Image (cartoon, rainbow, N blue to C red):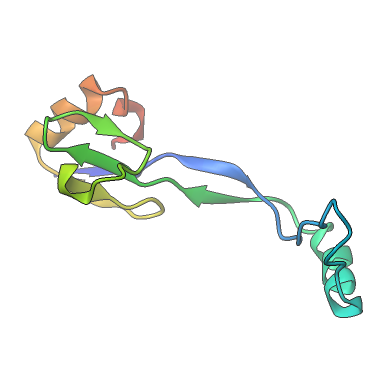
Length: 98
């Protein structure tokens, strides 16, 4: 059986965002944590791939859960059968299948 690993985004940083308005400044502990976080390399985050009931695939979560036929959770290795391999390849996810 083939294995599908959904694509990842490699931009997840380990720092807290500053509030641009200045209404909620970071505490002293949060600022110290950010100093450490700037030295940690960005990590990857898996994207969920949704198979919709009409047979199409998307990585954007539909607003109506009734439209979802199957979810391929990001960051996991998922065993797929030959039909799913063909469908995922046709949808442009063939390079994520081994």
